[in-house]
Image (cartoon, rainbow, N blue to C red; front, top):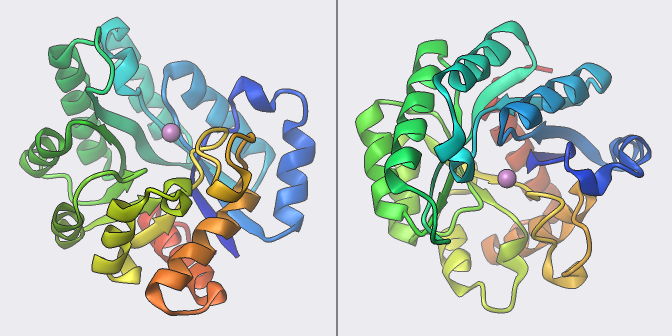
Length: 255
Ligand code: NI
């Protein structure tokens, strides 16, 4: 019943066993996977995964880290990928990331806003990557008029999460919620109605505490859902059921 709303199965770290792993996971409780884009290459790879596996959907988009090398032609390709493929159900991941030095904020904003406009034009939800840029990211999204999507690997305040939810967005919760120092994200989960939460891996990265350091995969969402169940005082099954419903609603998957 698990819906992994954010994964990167095109990553090289899955080259050796991608097919076996995807098949195994789908036979063992992973019902759907959204493979997030981050570049033209990754967006195309997501399309191929979607063609091969009926339970894999994908997003087309360029990650803020690549913003300075993006051409208008690249942005056009991102749009074309979304237009031409029915299983491309979102634009992402897009956003702002000010965590590391050496990336131009101006370029990031330009590429972010351009892709928000693509999403708006195509009426697709967005997958937002926001790191150390909470308020700016929120303001840009608000001004863009885009009102559907998910704030992936959410790291902002509980208040801002509630504000996002009011604007129509879902909040993506992953392995970080299981970490021993996850107080802030626990507060976010407490503050939000479960109807606004989706679960994710961001695999191969961000494995939960119990398997920290390992290559992450969608089966490990079990630890995330268990933690959310504990915080919310509801059953593990209920968390899987509701977050699965939320993600299908977010990406407009009717099955
Ligand atoms: Ni990601």
